Length: 218
Image 1: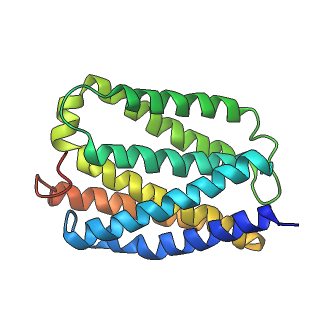
Image 2: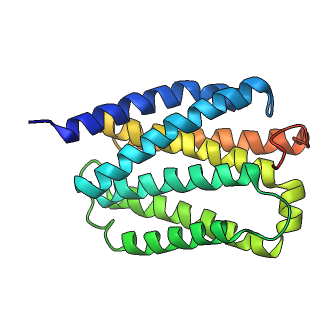
């Protein structure tokens, strides 16, 4: 009989490994350049495979709630980060509002369940992950009130930070699962490195703004 769980897990690990390898290219190449875009498209496709297999596992195989929260963190940053790259000027689109509201609803559903974690995925990891997502969700909804400023000065930074967050959410979840004997360090260390990279990117962006040449709205 076909081992669907094993097949899904194998595909998830393979796609995740490739996404982490290819994802370094857009992270560290010239923003908006041809290599950045091409490697970015490949990373996005691999990331979609990673998230799709994670969602299947969450629905069919009853993982601990903190791991579901990690999937939500990666998935929301992926979707919102991609949306940020291509949002045109004007009011925040209904799809972006709906995406954030759905994220809030899922956080609410998970909040009471993350208390029932596991030895590998503790409630502390679950609550900290949900808190991180909630900050992003509130920020995203706040764009309704300052969309014109956001589009001129923040949009490309928003895209970059969220895609970096997605990358390190994948790395943290993968390391936490594959190096369970080293938890919580195997989960926390990638997250801490990701935070440092995000701060570094934010500082770099402040000193070298990415203007219309890069990721222009379509």
